[in-house]
Length: 144
Image (cartoon, rainbow, N blue to C red):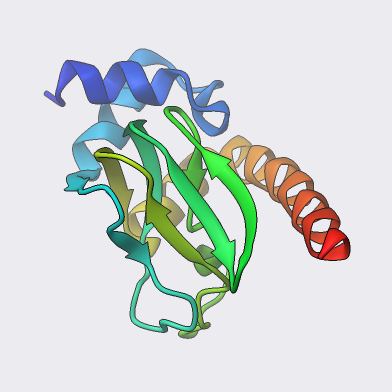
């Protein structure tokens, strides 16, 4: 059985809203929990080796492209989804930096793809959220 706090956090993530308790528990068991210190780089722009999708349990992160902050994310939000839609090592599009102590769950590309195959509604939720994020990033870059 997965950790109760991981299960509770996943229930609040829009991508998994359509899953039942058993399915959420399955997702939580597939995930690995990591902790990052204030200022630690979780994802480095240009990195091609990272295949993780991250769900924030506690703390907050900034998503930056160069000097521009594209987003600030907190508990229940996620990042790294763009690395999951390509079959090859696509460079990360931004830095993601811990703004305080951050606890996050990591799902690998293979973990998430298996979940999407079993529950296609996750992919639909991800596409809708991704479109919104692209729009916000474009707006942030236009203000630059």
